[in-house]
Image (tube, rainbow, N blue to C red; front, top):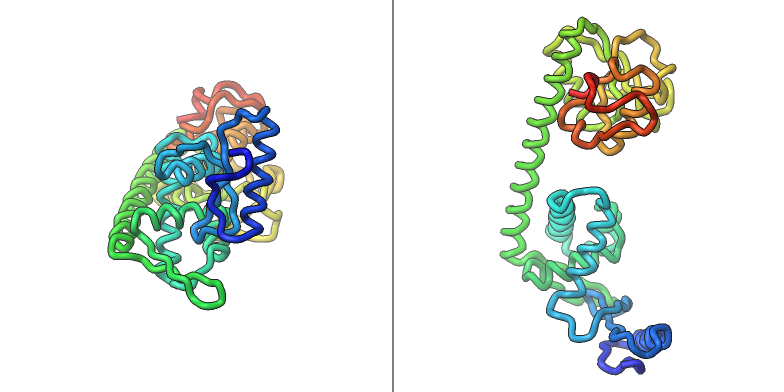
Length: 297
């Protein structure tokens, strides 16, 4: 095993890399590490992957995909990581369906992920019979959705839409509750903290309450340079031009930091957090008391 026997390679360069990697692993582990180098590429070229000897079928792609998905959502639950994997799979299937000559690099750019991860998802789709690969001239490859692939794309699309509608329903209910509390307190004007889908939903919900949104605060904004759904967009609290009674957290990805900053600036009593976002907030790290106090609903 130390000399690379049992590896698969398609050219002299790949074989040389495999032998060097095998020798390195052997020497580094004192000659006892049961690893060999093996090609891992949907077309059987270029990439070198390291895996245990006598691996079960599908071990390599499953390990790679699981690890990559976990790194993409380190703090997400297992269910959320499965949703990430499903969205990537759907993105790959849509890309192949839209253009059989699409490249892995273009798919990666469209989905915002690494080319190696696209390669792994394509390999999984091929192994599941969702995609077929055919070599065309000039060392290029064409991808085709199989009937099973079309069916899976339809299933994933339906699942994604159901998830999106469920998010909208929960987000709307959470915003309505928070804005209702603001109105009950006699507030007349609010700022939103965090540019997101939740902020758009909150703006729509405001139409049902005697409240005005005077600004949206997002640290990535350029002060005075734009708006968000006709609302002034600023990067800091002191850049808000009009007075306001309180703030509503609408930052989904950075909810904890947004809450901490708002409490430090305004005090917990002036900060409201929709239920849907409140699940991502614990005791503030920047002061302002416990997030379970009255500001969090």
